[in-house]
Length: 195
Picture 1 (cartoon, rainbow, N blue to C red):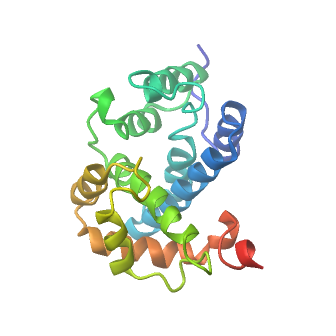
Picture 2: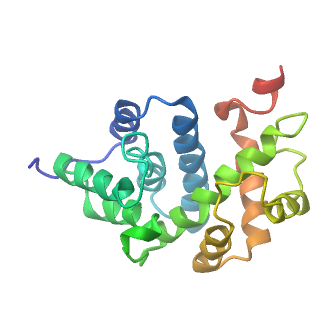
């Protein structure tokens, strides 16, 4: 086994791209990374470390998409590569089936933004401007009630994630709208999607 590495965003992104060829899965990693960066700034935490957790959280999904392999196998890969345990534990905690407790703020934040940020990208893609800039919380809330919209998103986990982080769901949605609007071009949204 490798000695513990000094985690860097570049190493995390390279790991994601090594294991993930599907462009939508890479984009999902990026949106979760950007949401994690925003929450790290909000809480005064280590932005790079939180971004690493965001970008890596589903790096194994393409190879191990089913329960119980997803996240468990990824954790083994990261451990073998020498990634720090707090990063691995937060990633394991985002998948309910692992049974790993989310006992750090970073782990709770990852769980809170994983399903929700993916859902919010879906909400953005059906907007004519493909932008977060004019998105309203009530429209996200309405789409959450529509079980056919983004049906793979677990609504119970969306609610549970906000609750575990100590936010009202509407507050977290508004926070993410505000923060993701600032970086939407990086995600190929807004002017980048319609221009």
